[in-house]
Picture: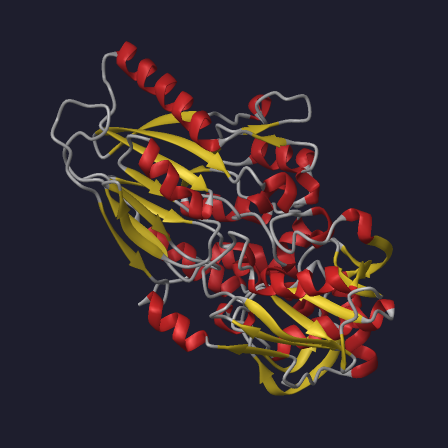
Length: 478
């Protein structure tokens, strides 16, 4: 038997050290002589502790879990290329990346030990690995803007050919071939184009185990809610002469595992040094932060963020992208600055954009992302302040759009307070661009803290977003 224990997108699991230690405990329990622990990006960031430690808290996790390999997610670049190079250089895990290029156009991190492919002996078999990252990362993450990201399919194909040739020259060949991917929905294209046994994925925050073009595709989900145990089987796979045995996979949750005490202590020590315990507000009714909540339409936490953005820059409209709101435990009782950072753990300011009414309607339409391939089909992607939108999910059109209770005038100009990310990314809300920028405010979590201190934290559902015909659409998809 040859097994892989796979985790990805653990992001802010480190903000609750006991949770991170329990996840590590489950990974350690699943590992063994016939197994290797591998990851597929967004393992260093984002999160409160990540922000404080510039992602280096993952070094503790790598050591505690004996992680063998990782690849780059878009959030690995949150603190810029140079801090990432230092982290890679110090990591016990090896980073495998075939399609990331540095500021000079050379393969990223080669001097620090990043490789396009790697082979490892696991359970008596030779397993080859290739790593790829979302080519939109330079758009998704402003700290990666100076880097370039090659088309992952030809990059992976070239790396696979080089790896197979090297293995053949050694006389051993490869028993199994695996792609470590942070492409999200791009995994399907990889499966159709490449001859590999399995694609271990991430980027999209929903668990997955299925087959595409006879290739096993898996994702463990987000924030350490699960890991995937992959059994590659006994016989040779891609690249070998033996009959291929189809790999299988099982999701394993960390509940019930024994936390690794040394890891928990190390993370607690890092968090204590941050001094983020200031109480900025109090919540009497718990405020949920689940994925279903922030992507399900209007929600209290989305309204709170959009209100704070609008207040900070005295804008006509506040707009928060749902994808920027990180999932976590509900807010209850005292809310600290650390809680706010855990919601939006990015060192990016709130920006002020000036748009025409016609452009604003386009932006509001993009909250449903009908023309943008991002996330799941039924996700809602935005939250607003001082605006109301009625959306027909069946016809994919806006039935009503108002600002301050008045219909939007297509010829008028409106100011919109948004995350700076939306002005440099075409991945979400492509209508918004840098040319719309007219001002900027403080870092986003600082804006939330200032707003909470002055206005408290008591958002209400007010009918800002109404989605019609969603049940009919869901029924059709089934």
